[in-house]
Image (cartoon, rainbow over all chains, first blue to last red; front, top):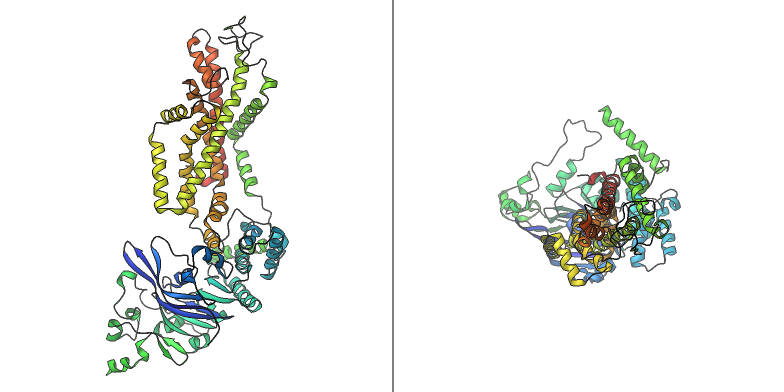
Length: 329
Length: 304
């Protein structure tokens, strides 16, 4: 069996809202191998971010709750941990970076104060040691003149530099798992490439495993080893990165790939997936993708397909089952 | 189309400058002070406030007489060379009493605001951060505090605690913390949703850390403004309570108790009541205008 840093099994995160029960994450299972990158793809609202917040145990608010499943991190179930134990894990063993580098840094403290924050909380370092490590981290994320930048405020940095600072903060305690929640969405294209390259590099250097959450398949192609496609709170396809791009099995993955404009294409219009993600109160009876699926049949509309194995990969679609052929007949 | 292109080009150049560290920045407070300096009225009031503070600190050097020294040979005198503003019914020099009175007024204004800010910021940020039931309980407490008529509430506390300057701090602090708490609560509610709070949380910070390191420092300009605008309020209440005889007790001079004892002689010696009244008025107006200016300078968005 592969050496998994984290194993998520049948994770269910529900929100009890005024409008009713929202099953934001509904039975999601996946593993991240040590030193590898798992890409999680899906449209807005498909449960990607909630999955990552569930791992951090940060959704226990008034309405949201993890209703079932297990999250095994380095052999221990995170869902059994107390809040105090979780605090020891957050930032130290599992770190996270966010979408918005412009607002993820506290405007009233210097870069240095913010990077040393996690070090002071977790590593019980002295101020001098923490400063040394912080400058080392800034060097590692290739910020020029780190000693000078250490004393500067976030508004004195550009967007790309702020994201690099965020990465430096996240990696300062040498976490075993780094969760990146759309780390490049707010940056412009050239900076995006730099940041992804940096994440890849640092992954090699530190041996950190990465969970890359994105809606951009370009990002996935760049960094991921394995890919998990989510739709409406469920996993619809899981495969290695190469397999997904070579031959997507699920019609949704196929649609996503078709949406990427190609260089040798002079079509006037970009292709889209017709329709919208169904809202949680009008979830169809059968497969959640069936209203938008060009291949949908009666069976898709009436029954939720299971996630089934096909060779090395998994897909949740009737197209690859015997039932499909029966329906054909 | 070319405009968009222009925009991105400019942004790119700006980012490049940031990257190369070519842009000179002034700090937030230097920036605010520059804005404040443009406001002539506020600067004038700041000057008055500094003048009052100097008078209060150096009262023994400035005042021509001991404010409590009684001189029965010179009772109720009209202004003269010896006593510029005249003397009161015990022959005490009115000017000296007003000068010493500034010590009481300023220290009470500041002391009461320090207490109000500590209580207000603590409860306001807790209510704003936790929300839900905690917020409900604290909000109801604030409403209870606000539902009493101010002066009667302060009188009740003073009667309960007894007279004295420390008790006056407490009474006025309890009277005014609600305003601060409300402002801070609203701001914290807004701030707790920001990404940097989320970022702190994912790096393992506990609630105390988040409130003290992420939330309160970002409310600092509000707190400064609330204190500056709260001081004149407290000075007014002190004067009212002393006027009613439950604040500062004679012979310690306070502007409030001076007016109180002067009212009997208002027709015979009008300056006796006008001068302390004028002192209160100037102080309160100066703090109010300066506070407004400070608010505009620190956070233009706060302007109502």
